[in-house]
Length: 248
Image (tube, rainbow, N blue to C red; front, side, top):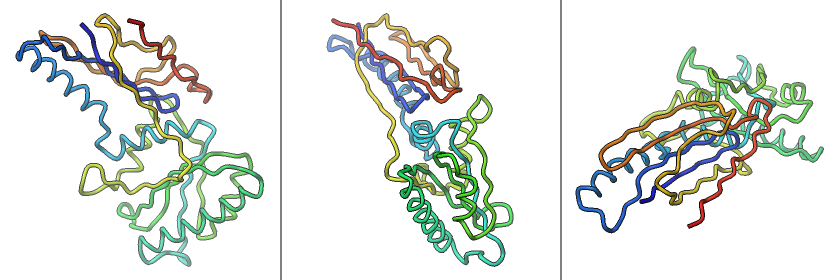
């Protein structure tokens, strides 16, 4: 017998599932039982909501040293529409990209524009890679109001998932619809799926930080799912886990 193992790696964040693989000699009843477990596994791994896609993108690109920035407007610069607010933000990004380019610095960012909660004033949340002299530079380049800058935080209470959900809190209509955007140079999560022997366990590396897990068993096998942070994530230096497939 064999199983399928699917792995998604996004920086220090890893999501895995393992579930029974079909066999040509399976009876219809066995195939149906395995299919139920396979469907549950795929539902866990499919990023159908915008925040799930964003969670992986954030983890693949940003670490503790990076910055969480909120850009607000004062009364003299308040935009009249969301479109105008986005144009103002894009102009700010062009200025920032040009300023960093002069020093050979890379710009990576993810942002969202909000204005449907609180007092209804438009504002922008921005996750951006740090370079050193960011606090003074960002405040000088915005020019539309206040700039609040904080270090990006990752721990058990506030992490990639909580930040992604926060940035997607004004989502509307369809589950996958998004209001966030990012720079074109963002790294993408890596995914792979392959067969493994039936006795292959689904476990975390020693020292990893567990975030979520689920499992279910029936007469035809078991599906398991785990999500965790790799050892070393606290220091922004988590190395990818080695994926050695067992030889046949």
